[in-house]
Structure formats: C-alpha cells, structure tokens
Length: 444
Image 1: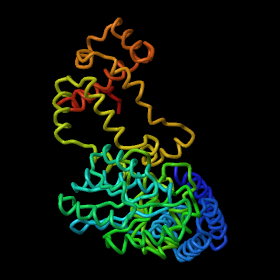
Image 2: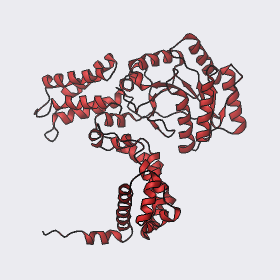
Image 3: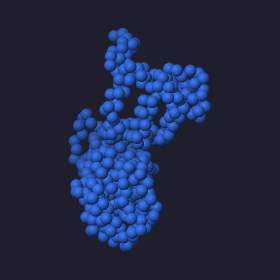
C-alpha cells in the first residue's frame, strides 16, 4: 500500500520522543533527522524533505508542551499539519464550468491517461449527473483509440474518434462541435504520450491546448515512477501550465515520494488519485486525509463517503421490512456483497479504519475474498435462495459440488447467514429490547 514504509519509519521516529518530559533542541533534532531520512527513502525530493523538517523543527521548538499532551503527540500533530500543507493544504476542485466544459489530459505513455479519462467520465456521469463525451486524440497508437472505445462501452459513455484523421487538433475541435450539437456538457480529451518527453509531443499538446482552450488541463503521472515523476511534471508544467495533477497506481507498492514532492516543485495541486483498476477506483485528493493515512490514523471520512455512494435509500427501506419479517434471504445477502465490492479494494478499505492498516500489513486480503461465497449462493436454486430453511443435507451436498467447494464451507456459510439474520432481526424494530433482555445480567 502507498506510504506503508514511510508510515512505519515515521512511527519509529516519533518513538524517540516517547518518555521525554519536554521538547528540546536535542531530541527534536534527533527525531527530525530520522524523519528526513524516512522522507528521502520514500523518494521525496531532497530540497522538499529538508524544507519540511526545518519548518517542523521551527514550529516544534516554539511550542509549550501542555501537561495533558505528550511531546511525541505534539510532534505528530505538527508533522500531520505540515504534511497536509506540503500536499496542498486545501482540497482542489476541478473546473467543469463551460458549455461544454473541456478537460485536456496530458502525460507520458504508460502513465494511465486513457484509463483515467474513463474513470473521470464515469465519476462525472454517476456522481455529478453530467453528460461526458470521451475524445480519442492519440493518432499514433491504434490500440489507444480501441482502449478508449472499450472503456466507453463499459461505462456507457460515448467516445468521439476519427481513426483516419491524423490531426489531433482537428479531432479535438470536431469533438467539441459534436458535444455542442448533441448536448454533452463535458468533453474529456485523451492525448498521445511518449515513453519519454520529446519536442514533437510537447508541440502537439501545446497546439491542442491553444486551439480548444480547455477549462481544465490535467497532468497524469504514474506514482510508481518516483522522482522521475517530479521531473516530468516540471517539464510538462513549463510548456502547458497545467491546472492540476492526477496520481495513478496509488494502490501499488510504491514509496509515494512523488505525491509529497510534486505539489511543492510545480506549485500545482494534486486533484485526483487512481486507486485500482476498476472504473470506480478514483478519488478526489484530500491532503489532510492523506496525511492521516501516512501517519497511520486511517481515513474514516473517505470510507463513509464511499459507503454513502453505494447507499440506496429505497433499497434500505425494502431490506428493513424484509428483516423485520425475518425474510432476509440469500438474494439480499448477495446484493450486499456486490455493494461492498463496488466500494473498492478490500485491503485499502480496511486500511481506512484507524489502527487496522498496520494490523493488516502482512495479511493478504484478496479482492476475490467473496468468490467462494458467491459461488455457493449462485449454486443454489432460486427457491433455495429465497427460503434458506429448506437447505437440507442432500441440497447442501449438491451445492458444494456445484460451487467447487466442500460441505464444511457450505455449512459454515449457512450457519453464519442464520446468525446474521437473527442478529439483524433483533436490532430492527422492537428487536433491540428483546436482545437486551436476553443479555446476561451482571451483579452490581
């Protein structure tokens, strides 16, 4: 997970201050020496790391430690606030004003531009009720046009392309005309990249920008490329003066230094992060929340937001009625599993819970963790799913064979399902008082 090593190193650094009665120049210097090394090992730009620790030292030495706050706790608070400032401080919004609003994507080949274009279209369509039009302006790679088409079909967003036209400026201009005539209110322009920066690519994307005057120009960078990402961002910014940065592959095993350096080096905000392969794996970048996660504090706000995105009020009311009548069945259970899966990578979701990320460090949580459960439920007949009480021994044996599992797994799932159903019945309606009444009485 992103920043995992940095989180561990910072935690060790703060332990230097544990047991200390107060903050002094000596123990702060020792702590921050370790913090600076941790940042450099995480591939943070040297000047950024030095400036960061100098600022933290200045603020730490100016603080009077309250008796209720330990020096290590105060240092964590200062480092947290400075990390948030380092990554931009405030959450930066994307500009989608315009008829249509035009968003230009830039970056090197392999950075994830095309995939992110699809993710952004998906987010704008499903969370903002916008009508996006994806535009294929990579005239060099036929696979790029096809990739965008496939993504467009997957998320049900139209893709404008002219496979025979080799002029990306014309294609972009025609796409905007198409959007105006058909009522699309956002045009996302996917451009060509190279394996390295070259003059032809820079001239081409600068010409596209000048011709279409986008409301938003985003620079997409693979966060796993480390310090190279910062250098590339600097060169693109000098030519394009882009509005914001997109960091892709933040779910990978990366040191994460780019995220901590780019904001300072190019003075442009990180606006979005890609956190997985699925189309819904896109998050707005919140500096303070990322600082929480770097320091092992979790990110419960983002977790709640993801849950709310999948929350359907009508479905919830329907389920509540079924639970009260003890009619919650395996179809409902399967529906809940699908909603959890839509929230994103399971290990990443768990890491958002304070204290859980560290505990799960060496535990592999596969995104297919629900696969055997789903296989068992899909092996049931419609009647069995609706009426779990009819699942006798012979039915269970048939389900085990049909799902490629064994009778023990089937029995375990049915037992857990029964317990879940009883618990849900108890905590709805008047069931709570019944559950309280059944709890053992403790002598005072």
